[in-house]
Amino acid sequence: MFQEEKPHLRPLPITGFRYFTEVVRTVWDDTTVSVERSNYAARPAPIGSLVCVRIYDTTIEIRDRRSQELLRTHPRHIEPGSLELPESERPFNPSRQTSLALASATDIGPQTKTLCQHLFDAEGRVGHRGMWGIVALAKKYPAWLVEQACDHALRHHLYRYRQVRAVVERLFQQALERLDRAPQLALPLTQEHALIRPGDEYGEFFNVGAQHSAAPHPTTSGETA
Image (tube, rainbow, N blue to C red):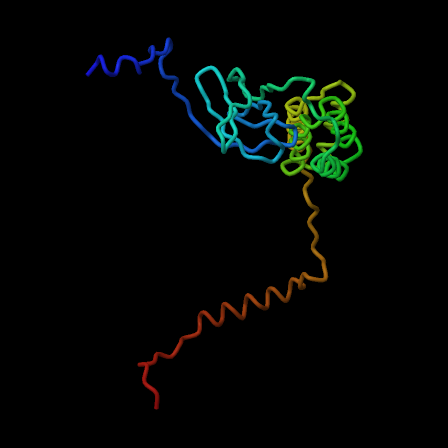
C-alpha cells in the first residue's frame, strides 16, 4: 500500500501549521484597515470594500474576501495607534469625510478649524482620525474650552490628538479648581417683599391653627342617618 502511495507523497513542510484569527474589515478612505487599534495599508483593495484579515502571532495578512488572494502582508503591531502605510500611498486629496470634519471643527471655533486643517495638510486622509477625535472633545467638554486648547496647541506646535486631549483635560481641571476656590457669597436676607406676608398675618394664621387643634372633635360610628 505504501509503495503505491509513495510517488504521490510530498515532503513535509519545514515549518509547522501557523494558527491565525480571521476577521472581516472595511477599507477606510485613507486606504487602510483597522486591526487591534492599529491601521494597515490594504491596497489594491478599493476604498469601502470588505477584506479578510488573518491575524498571526507576528504578521497580518490582508486577503480578497471572495478569492482569498493575498493582497498585503505586514508586521503585526502591538502598540495602539500604529500605522503601516507607505508615504507614497497616503491620499492627500480631500474626501467627503474631510469636508464633514472641517465643518464640525468650524462650528467649535476658528482655532479648532485651523488645527484640523493643519492635520489634514500634514497627514492627508490619515489625519481624519485625529480630526474627528478633536471634534468629538466638544461632546464631552465645553466648546469654548476645546477652542482654547486648540489655540494653545497651535502656539506650542502640539499637533497630535492625544496632546490636544491632554490640554483640554488640564484646562477643564483648572476651571473646576477655580470654581471650588471662588468665595461663596451669602444671599442677603430681607424682611419685606411682595411675596412675603406681613408678620401679623402669620401670627393670626398660627392662632387659628392652634385653636382648631385644641377644639374637641365629634366622634362618629361611620353610620349615616
